[in-house]
Length: 356
Image: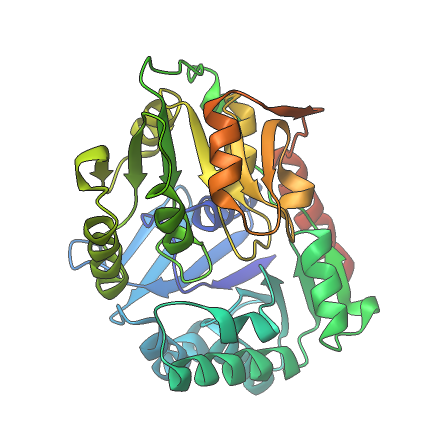
C-alpha cells in the first residue's frame, strides 16, 4: 500500500503526536509499504527532502502553520496522485489534505486530537478576532467529509459526535507510547519539593493559571518549566507572568531537551502539574504514570481516561489547593493504565485494511 501522510509537524520536531506518527510510519515502512510524509520545514537546518527509516520526508518551506494550510496544496497534489490513501491530522494540515483527496479521488482519513468548540472563547493570549478565526477554522475542518475520523480518546469521540460527525465514520484509537523508553527513568524526588510543568506553550495548557496559583503557595518549593521557545509571544507572556508573580528566583527554565534528557529530568522532580483546559489524549499523563511520577491534573476531558497511579485531580479550577495537597503528599491512587504504542499501530493498520 502507498500512503501519504500530510502533517503540519513531523520528525525531528518533538512532541507526543510527532512521536506517534513517526512510529506509525516507521512500522508501516518496515512492512514494505511505500510511505511518504509531507510536512513543514520548521528549521533551516532540516533537510528539504530525505529518506529516514524507510520513510520519504518532504519538508515544505513553510515554518508558519497557516502558510502550510493555504500554500501546500500544489506540493501535496504532486504526491497524492501516486498513493492509495491520504492520512492527515487536525488542524492545519487537514484542509489541503482533503482538497488533494477530492482532486485526485483518493480516500482521506483524519486523526482528530481534540475539538475545542466553545473553549476558543476562554483561551488566554489571543484577541477576540483571532479566537473567532480559529473557531471558524475548526468548524470548517469539522464540516469536511473525510472518509474516516480517528478519535484519540473517548472524550474526543464524544466531541466529534456532538459536532455532527456520523458515528459510523468514527474509530476510536488511543495514542500509545513505547514503555521501553522509560525503563531507565526511575522516579527519584529531590529533597527540596520541585514542581514540574512540561510541554507545548499552547493556549489551552493552563500554564498561566498555574503561575497565578503558585504565587500564593507558602510552602518551600522550586519550579521547573520545560517548554519550547515558540510561540515567542506566549513565551514572552510566561516570562512576564513569572516576574509579576515574583516566581523568578524559584524557577528554572529548560528548552529543547532530547527525549532522553526530558524524561531523565522529569523523573528527578517531585510531581508534574497538568493544568490543561482541555486534552484530547495527554501524553504527559501517560508518560508520568510510566515513570511512576505523581501528577496534579485538571478534572476534565481525556485526562479522566489517561491519568493513573498517584494523582490529585484539580477540582473547581482550584490549582492552589491541589498543589498544597501534593506538597503534603496527600495523593489518591488508581490502577495503572497502559497505552501500548504497538497496540495503537496495529489498530491503525487494521483500519487501513478495512477502508482500502
